[in-house]
Image (cartoon, rainbow, N blue to C red):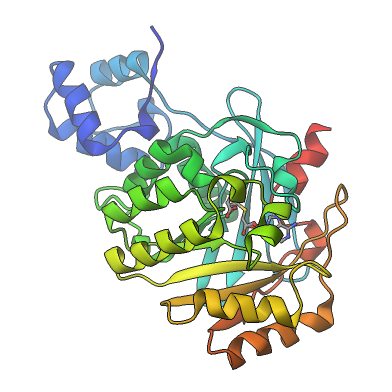
Length: 342
Ligand code: SAH
């Protein structure tokens, strides 16, 4: 019989499982605490549980773990990039960043990606599989254990499209914020999507406190379809309409990511289009200098960054420029995994 992935189970699922084993319900909470608060990943060390039950647990459940196969530490700003090996031999990345208000981690949600964005390293070799909730959580738990640092915010902006792994991501959000476990407020979490409109609509029903980031990167359909194939399925008008509905339902401000690409989307006219597209929305634009990837020729003209920000601000939009961290260790997503797998 295949063992159950216990780190992907919610407390109530664990309670049901324990009851069906003829055990008391409160045992589930004890085990949940060992896993998600004490971070003990070995049943034999769970000392408030009888040795007979510990053996039964070992037969029924497995506690997955991630192996750190590479760790790059930035000499400039304390950023750490981990390359993890999953139990099936696949690899994923996550990045730990030191911000003024505490440490933040950027996690992956899939092995590879199907979305095909032209500027992104994560999608070049295609898609392998979805990550389980436990594999998302373990990126955080493993980085905290290894670095000794406490993570106070999470961004889901690593490899993969979170809303293309919808059910597991929703489960992960429940686990990471569980008051009986890791207990992180979803106000400290950002989820970034290339714009799967149907899933944005579904997500709005949960009314999570998280920040939704939309990878917009263009101001019209022609421009966007050239760099993001997902735009053919969900064009800009539908995406913006879904964002407006999301804001209305959740009361949360949306963040639009905008990678500024030299000669593609950094001119005055595009800025004006972006202003008319977003004006009046409760939103914020985050301008991103493009991370160069060796397979592609996209770059940002550094002199255009402040200029573009100024255009947007003049037009009444709230715009910031993303700080570049870990530039000496190729901290942008997808790059390390690719180097390792080639
Ligand atoms: N699939 C999700 C999350 C992963 S990508 C999404 O599309 O949002 C995380 C962010 O990094 C996205 O905004 C993505 O467009 C951006 N990104 C990817 N490659 C980049 C690159 N080479 N330079 C700058 N930003 C990049």
